[in-house]
Length: 113
Length: 108
Image (cartoon, rainbow over all chains, first blue to last red; front, side, top):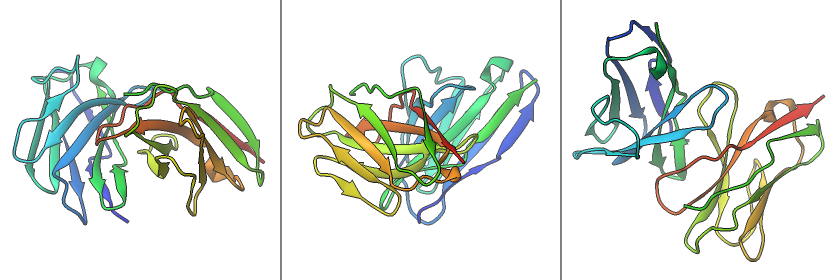
């Protein structure tokens, strides 16, 4: 079946630095990808919709200058957490519409120390 | 987007059927009902989806009431690997808004 790959699986960074997370569709093209965030013991929260070749659409309350999204090709979307702080520590998950349905990546665990 | 109500948690004996209900009384006519599950620290996994008719695949069955205000996901023979959080998500487009889901524990 269709696979969405995320990299890295986990990352630890220092407060104030930026971290980039990649989301790739491995065997299909994805004009639209989605980014979610999940805090411990909570549900997934949609952050933004990433559109190939255009600006991302952010959900209300999500800072677009802090969470930079780039969707430069039909198989790659990136989420950059800029000037990360401990409160940005979370599980970040991407998804894309694949043939047969919406597929999610395996997630990236970000810890900011 | 329609809001959903699901039991917070459920237990099921291994080998028995697990029936997970979902109330989505505000669902609109063009919204499908999707079911996903999430095993701890992994991305959500697609299970099944439907619009009006009942659906069945190799993983589960989906029963949607005639008025479409609720649905039930049925795992016919639950195994320990089915322990997960199950999400019912009404959606018409690409964007999924997850509710709190049901934490299913399959007991040996």
